[in-house]
Image: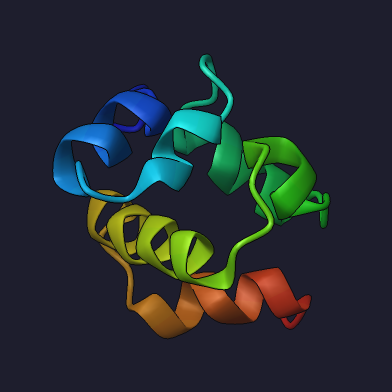
Length: 80
């Protein structure tokens, strides 16, 4: 599942959210996880600067990686 494309998942899961169409096409959840490890700008990576979209992606990433949401969030904050 980590190789699932974010945009494909998001536009199906949140079909009524038009911001899904603005997500970059080829970014996977593994790309997101690796970007967090490297302290990259997540908004630049995904192509959308909306905190609700980010939160939804972090929630799904936590499920995929089988970790608590707090781990993903703290990874983003640079604690891990």
